Image (tube, rainbow over all chains, first blue to last red; front, side, top):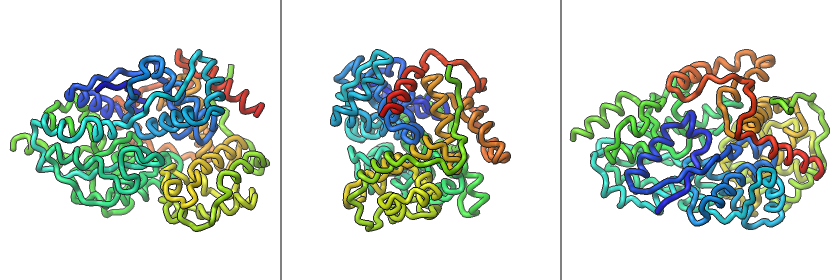
Length: 293
Length: 195
């Protein structure tokens, strides 16, 4: 089991802890990752709002790089937006020869050719399907049974391509969280939208959506995410939401591999825990007491 | 050399592209107006036209109604409507198509969204990957004449990100880097112009 790895822009900046913890957990599980050489931006949610051709071509540059490196390895992607962009482009390249010709005309400018043969996989898919909860449980050294965790999936790792989970009622994180020893927070918000880039262009709308998610997480020690945009929206505006609505208090927001890494006994530094924006003292104390339990 | 940031500034009333609208009409022709899209949309509470009504306007070619509405810019691409549409229509993609029409048509009333996406695209055009500080600085520069207080809503977060080393101090007018996608963007522009 080994993968090509596309971190994407967020994981080199605002979501560095997602990159650190993904690499650390995969390393601890003995899964080698090879970073895509000279990868470029997938177009995020911007390309699709500006140009259809760019929204296919920008991800296709990276598919072409991957196909040139090793056509037999899947590309693993932790960011849900990057995942969907590369996945959509790969599906289109494989099924639509006309679109593939147009994109290859564009890619010829950089002396690249895409076929669409490489398989695009989300980190959660790899953890849940390929690695599996049992393999993780075997390596757990820290008991996290004091913690109650709310699994948050967001949208784009689930929809529109239902690859590894139910797109409306996802469950794939549950065995992974149980494998760490933690308990599950019962809630219905796991597949609801966080507002995505509305937080920058239509903040009032995004705050409303995030508020509903934080409200439903009351009673959980942390929400875990699998997308940098979800993570940022849930962690960075908690004070503003508390002031505006008055009925939510701060809650810890972690990336899923950070939680798994804690259970594997990896250090805070290795998991980038000092980089999180919402890591409450309550959570720190509780997870520390779990270590001593 | 093409420099950054020619975000859309033309006046409202730019004539929507009929050909582009026809392409969207073809995609959603089988709409039965059942309203599953509206019921599935997390942003519907903030929309002036419900998604179902928007698709009706598209099918009737009511460009004035479509391009005075903010509905399509309120799509956050959650794909719930696409997943649930009983006719299997690519509704999220059709929302993207409308966003692209607004972007290409330089429609001023969509400026917060089109400027945001435009500056993002121009930043990756020059550098191949996003440079957050450069992108956000340029976005605020475009927006502050009309919304002078806009950056204040993000100042606290900006400081926290700098302190954590998650955003770098960047000169917002840096020269294109070695991963520049200039040739790719130029080719796409020439192909779209001749389409």
